[in-house]
Image (cartoon, rainbow, N blue to C red; front, side):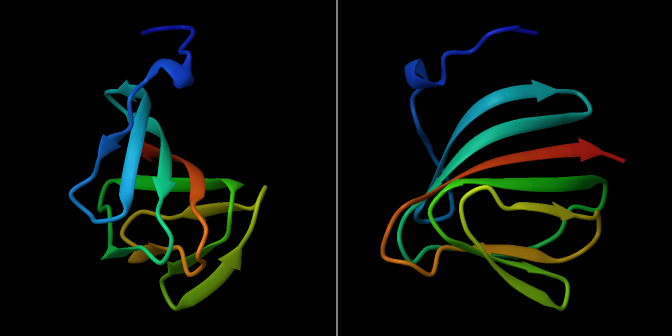
Length: 107
């Protein structure tokens, strides 16, 4: 495992989901950590992880996170914890880019 990563030297990887790209910062057997760039007005649809708890930290921009029955608007420095098996989505409802740190830990 690397102990230092210069994220500016990593390329953005285009996601299968339109408007999303990422830089993989950590990939280990029990989890991972990515920087995610979300284009304006882009939606990562409802999904769930049966074996992982996911967490999101907003670096810049505005985001709307749906977590189960809750829909929460967030901005810079907000933090979300998304329990395993709970349906959730990520939505950039603004006309500006959003950057998130997204991690997951296997339960």
